Length: 317
Image (cartoon, rainbow, N blue to C red; front, side):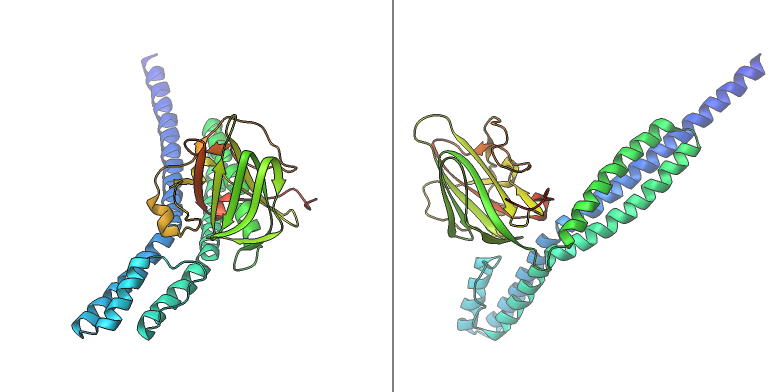
């Protein structure tokens, strides 16, 4: 009896050890994947830091040469930070070379990030598939189910990334902003007014949009409750951009500023506020939230990212 009990205890410990090893293996895979994705997401920050570092090196060079004209020019470039969309390169050749190289790299960054994301997703998916098979063969069905759930999530996300890669290299989109508001909203892209909305639902004219563009909305409520929802759908219906509270930051409502650089966006800390749920008022599926700022007047700013984009359900009507 004692030998039998000890044998049973040894088997239980063995099974428990296998379960723990599988859990640790799954946890390690998830952690590595999370770290790799974070590196990709922060590659834009590293690119900007490298650009500003090169400008600082030029600043030291011009200071040593006591070239006050070039020193003033490079300081202006440093103070400007991330170049605005449509801005012209600096007149000083050395600064312009650094500026142009950065702008080219920044333009190519979204696609590079997507390619790298797809690469690590496929590798992660292959490892999850192997782990799920091993767990199933070992009879660890609970752990295998958890891995299968994660695998399904990554498969869906990979389809989205592959779909985004099908868009041209500059990630250019063309379609309409759809707005539902009470009482009024003005929508700006890179400082240009593209739509004025008053009460209920409306759509803008067809406008171009790309990753990195700044979307600023000016909101006003005059009588009753505050309500605003914004989405963008491409003309062919293949892609939908959803705007959630976390995508927007609250800007100075008394300022006339309607443009925003990624660097300026990073300095804004207060996200938009979720205001209830009035359902979907647009003729297509999306994930946008009902949002506002503080008070009856508000200005909200967002930078278009790949995370906002999802495949649409078909041709737009």
